[in-house]
Length: 514
Image (cartoon, rainbow, N blue to C red):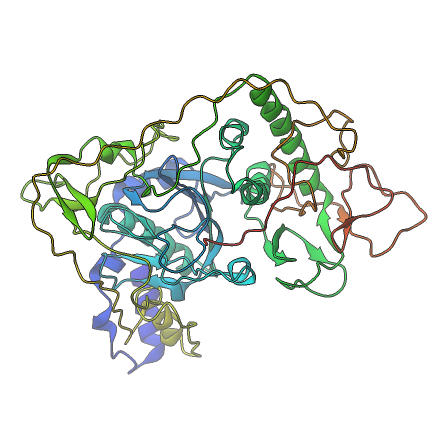
């Protein structure tokens, strides 16, 4: 498909073929027979849209793809070779944090000339990040298995992920969404991390997660009042990341599906808390993690120190290959079983240690500068050439660490947190509000649903049916009653006539990594 599109573009463009040789072959590799067979098995057209989900704690990256029904389904789960920082969003340049949030990847953010094999730029900071004055640049998903602020895969993995994105773009997808989370947003994980200072932010992005999981459609994401809103359409005005949220509406079918999921999660969360589920340690100074698949294969006997961090090696993926140098994570890894039988396991690339928090611009779909918007062209070749990065050049090579072997033993992982004391079953305060359109059942303190100003979320229904009704945010009180199944908002205030709302404590907004 890619080669056919390029050939057609060249035919339309006539003499406009200068620069075609600049497209590296690694960016044009066809999908493997195994991947094509998997697509056929799951009923997914090669060029249908994709969506990417990243989970830090589990160190897994999922690629979802639209099947013939128009619904997104899980295509494949990849173990992440390395991510840096701690659980929590990226705040400022140099904090080594890998972003968390919702990002949109356009062809102009794809870089075939990356010094870390292949890469795509997450687009940090996004509207949410900018509203919170967060800084950083060139935060990537790339190869080479080492990072300082990015999500690093092996070269083999990024080749396949990159090719899936390329085919989706050539099939007409304008951009694909990346949802980056600290962990899988289950009630149990939320209970485990309920003492984290990031919990308010995580409650907010969980709402976007709930919209996707309840509907299996990509949620439309906007930002207003420095927080995310999902699948919301303004009744009047528009969304301003730092301005007051306008009155807006969310399709009733979507709101209902999301509300059902959140009610279920609230009950599970309260049960976990009342049963005294052990809380995770609030760590500081940790340095990310890697999937157990890779962690188990690290050779730490010959480790050495580079840039103040300990480096170990991964064995080559094939005979005669070079070992991969990887910065050792300092935190205790979370052993998590693969979420899908198609999870890539034991795929080790031949690389060097990469530093990542932004040293140079990245490129267009197959080349160019990721920091610049893709330029349009009226010719067929120009349009695809914009994607292929003709004439583009990337210079994202940070200096490699100059380290000498050290005889010091590898650093030991941080000790696990001590179990928290078993809390008593939570009791609702008299002033605690209740969830809209739900029973008057109280919610445990620190519940996982955003409590101050719930943001309507999005996505199409799980059955693929189009929304038949919409829940409308009224700008002012109306004499007639709001249906019990609608959750109405006006400027961040629950509209009279809607059911009362259960509080789960305040939460920030989130539209990207920090």
